[in-house]
Amino acid sequence: MQRRRRAWALVNDHGESLWTAGAIMDLPAERVRALVAEERDRRELQGLRCDAIPVQMTRAVIAEALARDPDLTMGRIADWLEMHQSDFERAYLGKSKGGRPKRRVNVSSASRLMIALGRAPNELPGC
Image (tube, rainbow, N blue to C red; front, top):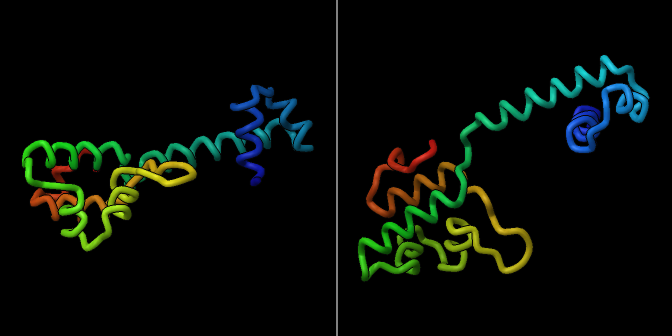
């Protein structure tokens, strides 16, 4: 684990003071304060980056399309995207056989989905 993340975890997750975290990490409290500030800034920038959207957004768009057209199926949408239905469900609905379900869809994949559904990519809320 990087020093910056370790300092963040000690101070914010474990509730240690800067001085206690410094003693644990064998660093001065001011250095721990700087590391925590760097990690806070990194996390803030990470949150502003828009390279992926929550899978709930693609789920909502798919549900809306299926509700609008009773003849439309997930298999058909998957065919439009040249995917197997199981891969489609994993990529756009977050379904998983085992392990942790997918929580985000990258913007280029979400754009492909919107185009396949006959909608403009910028109609997708979020990005």
